[in-house]
Length: 78
Image (tube, rainbow, N blue to C red; front, side):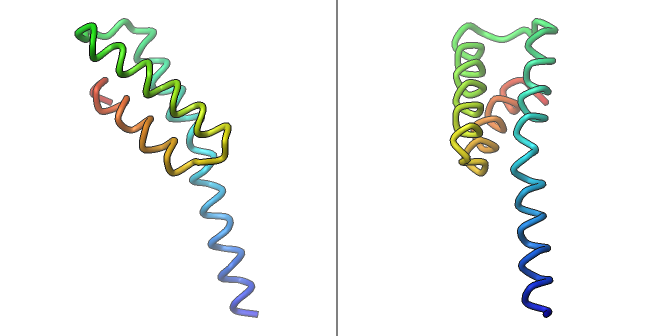
């Protein structure tokens, strides 16, 4: 019984983390809507990482998505 409970808890925490991708994308979109001051190459990289994060999220690769979105957020100063 303890094994099943542990498995359930592990699964639920993984699902909660996986569903954070959309919130990360929303934060990036909100910052981009505020027209942040970035150099051209940085803005291009942010947009590319945002798009890559969404693509990875849709493919079910949530850990990779969070990494890509995290890089975009770092460049944006979030």
